[in-house]
Image (cartoon, rainbow, N blue to C red):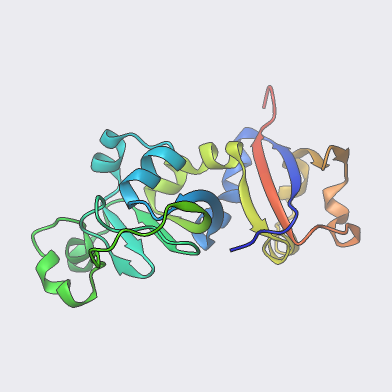
Length: 202
């Protein structure tokens, strides 16, 4: 997938309001990553997750809408969608949990390796986070920066509650200070790297 020129939007927000941006993590955000590698390699090398975190906290993984059991063989491809979740409740959660005792009940829909090694190259995937992983990883991803399409940002800004705007301490688009509460007057690029982090002293 060819990525067009990316604008950079840097936001500082009151620390207790950083959760406003978690909705992007559930909807999905783009990550530049080597493709043609395993899910495990991508989690370790691109997303910076160590093996202990992956094993202890990430209980359910979907790759292109299929549940993953073996992260060592499931292969990331360009434009893949990777959804990560902590433990999900109930029978559905137990059935979808990777490596769980009920995994055999979903054998026909599980993600399986085709035995072929994909060509390793740079690409982009969409990552989605759910339940406890949002609060766990949300501030880390937002500080590193997440790729969003312009429409995602505009839909987000257009639906903000009144108490959002006072919590926004500063906003810079490509190093130029902007007033984000007049966002409808701003010509955002089609793709943005959003960096959002708590303001100092908040």
